[in-house]
Length: 201
Image 1 (spheres, rainbow, N blue to C red):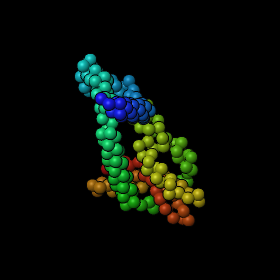
Image 2: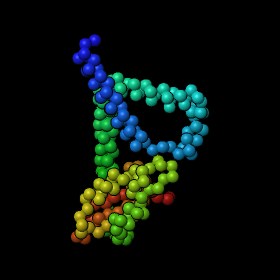
Image 3: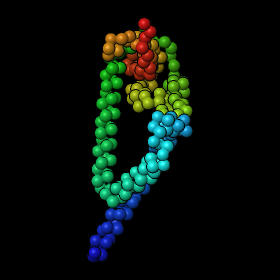
Image 4: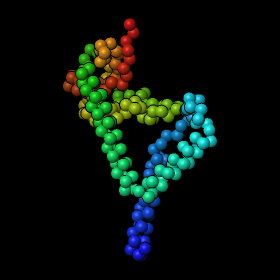
């Protein structure tokens, strides 16, 4: 093997190692550790999780093979990661568009407003504190992105009100919706639905 090829291979492997390190650090920082209660529940639902063979495959073999793949074939790994991210973003946009479409169909009336409330109070009251870490510790948890989108539409002169309304769902059943609406110059210009609950029959 010529010196040029050795140098190129060395650079290739070093780049692969750096990419692997970045992915590992990102995974460690972004992954929420499962609580002991969640681990116990998973073990109870699938007894194989307790076996040494399962733990070896899940905790050692699989990560080692994935790391080796990324290190040796990092260009392919980067393409795959980019593809997965695009698909995830496309799915998230699609879900967001569906949520916004449903919310726009259920416009809020002035008569359904309950009380005026500040953004700071709302976020203090609605921040999720999940002991199982299943939901992010941000205002409205998994609905945090929708809340941020609602806030982006606000103007300094807007008044924020809580509201409660009755609406029909996609199947024609009555449901109670709660959330917050922005009032500007006496008109509701935007709203955010935080809860939906089937009405009692």
